[in-house]
Length: 122
Image (cartoon, rainbow, N blue to C red; front, side, top):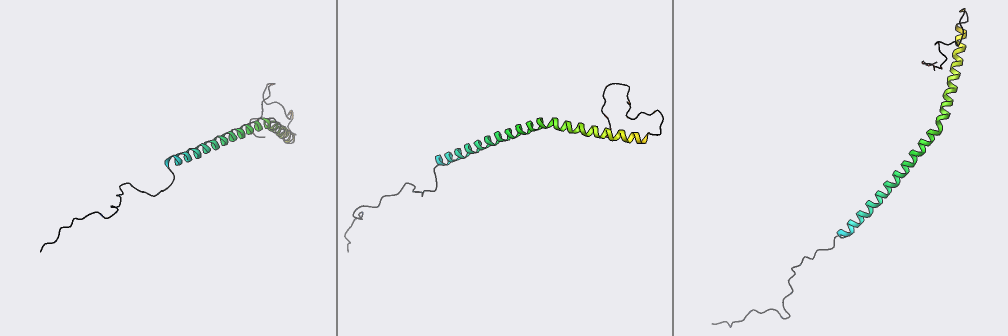
């Protein structure tokens, strides 16, 4: 018994195309978009740092000028305080040394005409 020979043939319309490329799904922005966004964020950050440095420099300049303008007032206040303390010390010296003959209250300790500020707290 012999079976008739029959050759295997492709289906009508042909075989389906072979997919040899990678078909990956879209998973986010491209590298150029990421780089551009990074550049913009960095540029904005550097701009803000520059503005902060400018403001800090302006505040420092304002602080220095405020100190420069306050120095005469503070010196005058210190001078008034020194005069007040010297007056109180003179009154105390008069009270303490009232019984000592020849004592001059407020007399000079040093034999000089040069002003020497007190070296201890009065």
